[in-house]
Image (cartoon, rainbow, N blue to C red; front, side, top):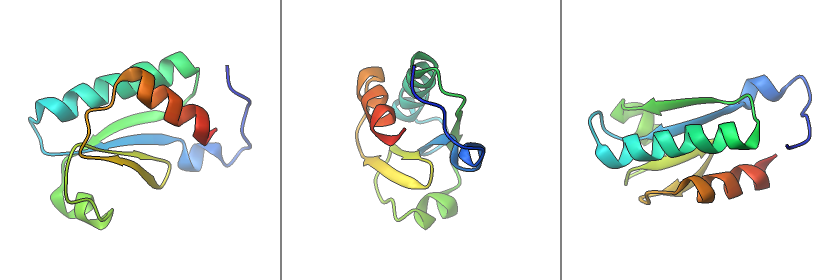
Length: 92
């Protein structure tokens, strides 16, 4: 659906949800991110980061947070699949 990126895409081709282990909102955002990535036809890895030191390294103090590539794009909000899809569309 989106244009192909260069060979460097795999380097930054990821979506991360930052939030505590067991956080229902974080799990929902993770599932929504997976669906949005799939809908967009992107070969991005989607992960859920629970290590508080790693989360703090992004400067995030409120979760869930969403990281696309190396950029924090949302903090403290449960994003819908459509919202994440729109963010991904703007990033590609």
